[in-house]
Image 1 (cartoon, helix red, strand yellow):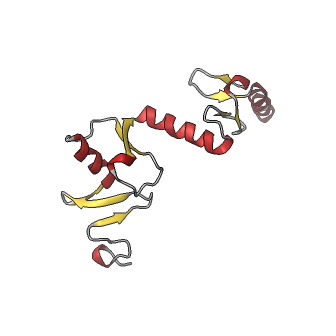
Image 2 (cartoon, one colour):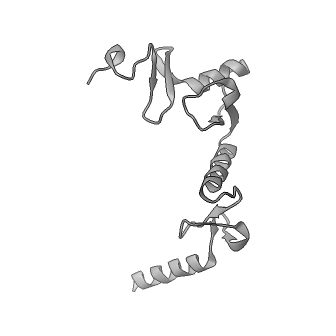
Image 3 (spheres, helix red, strand yellow):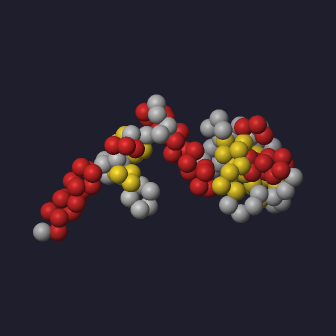
Length: 134
């Protein structure tokens, strides 16, 4: 398999990695272009825990106006709400940890870890575990 300049993905020191992100050769290694772009705009290296989110969802669109620097927790929230919006048209919908279906939060219960579930799904899960242990 060709590598380096002979690789089909080689673009003058940039490659698209397996996850769809642009990587740029710099400092002897390939670095994520969106992180480098964010650092350029900030004028400093990203801090531990800072994540760069692609607003458009296009991982190769590394224009500064398409990048949002946020915490990992906020980044997960963005994707949770985007997934719910895409699946249901309602960004506030939550996914049941048992049946994996989306529903309104009011129709669900939340556990101590912040996970949502339908009471009927939890009961069915507990019954199935009981039956398996017999």
